[in-house]
Image (tube, rainbow, N blue to C red; front, side, top):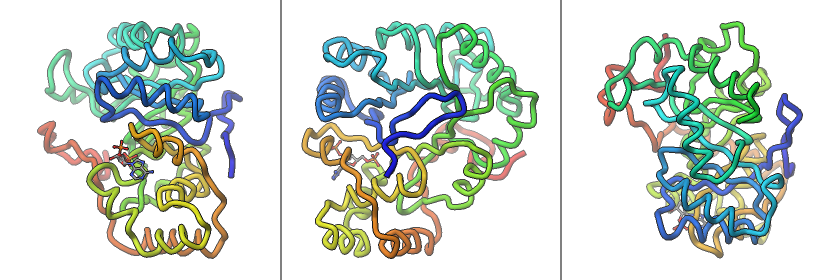
Length: 299
Ligand code: A2P
């Protein structure tokens, strides 16, 4: 299985990252150090995870050079106004203790008005002004690659219908056994857009059920690997980047070891994952009081 994918910029992004969403203070730094020691070279974070300072401190204390590490952060919803993008990015850079990001992503296709959780309808309907600012950040050398997150196909089409200087390199979305999104995967492959799988094990809510699925357990037994390794390998074999989160040293180590599944096993897992109605774990539409579901068809 590929250890890296090549982005349109020519940069090589490691296929497995440590995800640090929900990695709490006092544990995330150790997780990052454990991951780097285990051989991870890709850390997926975000401003809103509120742990960038501790991640930065761990990166500083680790003996791996910055240039060997792929670092991703994400622009939060309150900073979509073009004049707010660079200060938000600068804050993440400062906290992380670096002068560039390998990848900067629009976290949600939802813009909030400054310092509120009230939706900015214009910038939500049209993310192009925000995107142009991200393009400027690439020109300035503050970020190497730019992408989006939580965009469905209509929202991707809405953004890419503009005369972009730089196409989104990735779309980071929820992908797991219970929400495998085959149509989005197909669309992104056809459009040279790499998907990144967040909550790849089903997040805290579904990881137990996922790793106990009979198909997963059977394949794990056949290959002599763990159920988590089966799922993480399946993601990479589907052609996506995978961002498992763990703060447990043995799991962090386990999750980096991926194995090519025999075709029959891969097909069986794909069939099992796609033959039931999808169940999404993450959907903040209600919590944010949106009048629409962020994953519904749009516009
Ligand atoms: P923990 O961080 O306590 O080790 P996801 O990556 O889909 O968001 O899932 C994260 C959840 O899965 C966390 O609860 C994490 O627990 C757990 N987890 C991560 N890796 C493994 C593993 N190899 N085996 C079992 N559970 C895991």
